[in-house]
Image 1 (cartoon, rainbow, N blue to C red):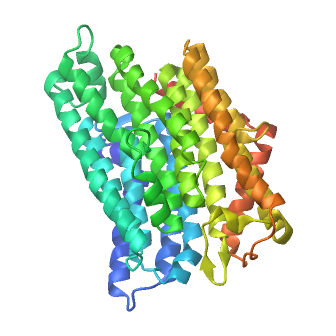
Image 2 (image 1 turned 90 degrees about the horizontal axis):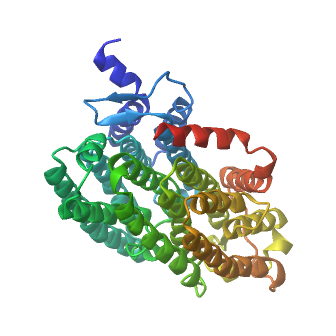
Image 3 (image 1 turned 180 degrees about the horizontal axis):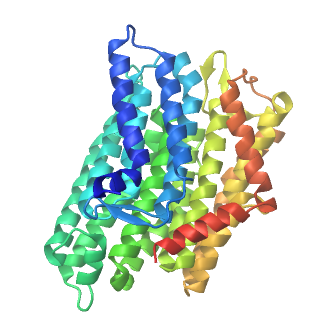
Length: 477
């Protein structure tokens, strides 16, 4: 196999998304009319094929494109999660976009381009590839955050995300330049080799700036300020895309760069991770208590959950990375299921977002009430639901690494967070009924019920996911 064909074989999903996005863009431009359902259908098909490609086994991990791109078990695991999040978000968006009058062909094309950036980001093996993937993902996300052009909240969300995102990208680029200047290379393994022995102060500054840029994409404290406003203002399917697929890519590249580029300065980066983890868990737990908008509540919930995921990363071990992977996989299912329920909140032909609109849901939509309650309890970490096991993996890794205070703080934050999750359950089952919800599309209903079943029954058959996550974590070390 020639070097070029070898490289293509290890980057087929990315090539498929790039060609597919360009073809759909041309199809949309040259077809008469701005709205066309076939563009969305084809985009879903492209994402589905790319997702299936993640399960095609290649014999060995490979470095291609002059070492800028790596194809390994870790990358394939996280790409499968990102593609799954993008596929389901786009599938759930069709009815919402049509009802809001924004079912334009540009939306699925932008989702494909953002997903392409995510895949490039997950497989980045040097600082240049990391930045290119990050910017490709971010530029598409800026646009779809404000895709509802005639909605003031959506325009505000897009502007805030763009301005703060540009600032975070600048910080990451500055940190990357510092690392290159002091290490003499942009390659992750090269940086790791150059940092053996005494570490220059400039390297620490570079690490801090790079972590600040990545923390913004993960929406962890203290770079979380955009999250509640963007989650609330953006169209709900876009919010689901942000909370699912985009988070997978941001966490994946953070884990990769920490483990492969900075193994020799564990003491320095662990302080940063622990600091962000503790603050994220605390802010996510306490700031969500007073929220009445369910999308803002999910924003603070996501901040808290990213803090829990970082507990595993703080351990810096193979078991810790395994904990992060398990956490993100389960978090993806819980998030998509919850947003499917949010997309089912429609009365009088309008989508509603107040938590109190769920009042008495158990009397009008028993199935939706049960599965949404299961999502809330799983997000709270109540056993034997999947969310409990997600936290178990992360906390167990921290305890094995001797990070007892971090694990204890995580457990206490989880207890506090139970309040606002249980409050939603109480509103669903005990409050006087509000206006009943209208019927929704089969796609949204199927996602909600399948995600609920996965969360409830995870403990019955966890083996395949655990095995895949273990193999993915092992490939990093």
